[in-house]
Image (cartoon, rainbow, N blue to C red):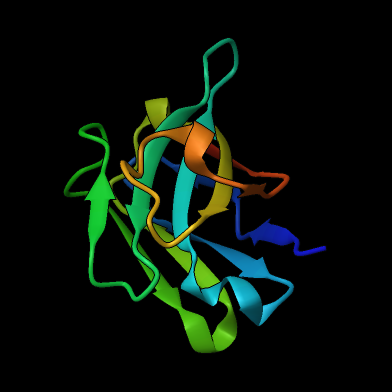
Length: 125
């Protein structure tokens, strides 16, 4: 069974940067749409960013637009989220997800078939 494994989370000061990654255990999902979601304590899971199977289309939540960048490297079965100008409110567990290539809108968590276990990102003041 295909697995998604996130890495790269950690503690960072406000204003700093961090890049998290998600690796897939098989190449079969390289043609899948990929997304990043996050869940803060006491809050519902929310969409962060999505990317088409070939990287040509990206979409971001308003809260992260201009600060976060999603990218993918299908040769490495990986998707990344580069986070700049981090804020305290970015603290959350970040999850990557994979859905069929026709997944749309990227923000609809129900359209994704596979989910990783999450990686904690903590932004301190």
